[in-house]
Image (cartoon, rainbow, N blue to C red; front, side, top):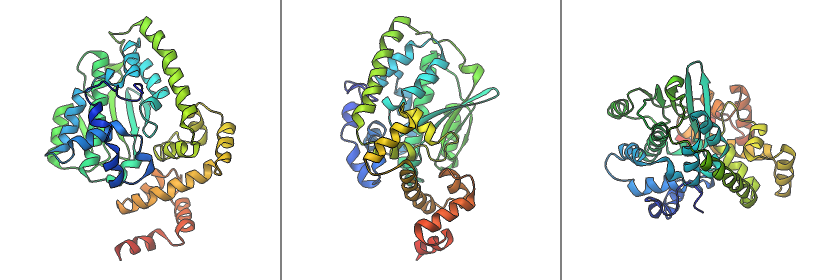
Length: 328
């Protein structure tokens, strides 16, 4: 399965293949299961001094072609905005638990990565490491595609860290850093990244595209358990401003009716899975001391009152009462 994230012959693969067990035991949530590559690197380096810095340094070493066929396809694209479109389309060949998203605001482009399934590790070096690795890898990818050094306009990360680490990141990326954000993101000036790719290759591009389309189709057909697949997607997209059943159907390249039929065969529905995911994540958010307003937003509620009513229905008590049970 070369096509899934790192090639088997890549430098890191042997360090990754046995990575899941330890992390799954430490953070038992089924949605973590597919994130083999990132968790493998965490496992390999976790426990070393300054592990969060190591994440950034590993990211600096990773190359676009470490993504296998997809990486070489990205290198062959004509322009950076083709890369953006293809990353969005083929992201399931990287992971079905991380969702890439690009936002544009006047002269800026923000590259978001939703990772709520890992927020149970908030404050730990594991989360710091994973966030630093992801930011560093994406920044390295941009620089490698353009074959020149550019710097972000700003960076946001999920975790909270020290002033020392903030200075480390600001020096590395030459931009402002915000800790405790809702999602990881890296923002660039559009003028800095709006360029043709020096390594673009028409022949490679048109040779690899059918292969990637076939792999994406195979991923959909072979995954089998649609309820598990959709649970993963919901968990990695909750609170995202574009997230909806329609958006999920687009990401799966399936019609809403087809998804409904598949879930009905498995004895569930989209709304049932959505409610289960919200119930699962709300406990993690409360334990991490998030405010009700922020929790409501992350769970995809438009109003805090609607979230409060749902919580009372789930647990037969108010959020305030539930917090008291945690203290006692």
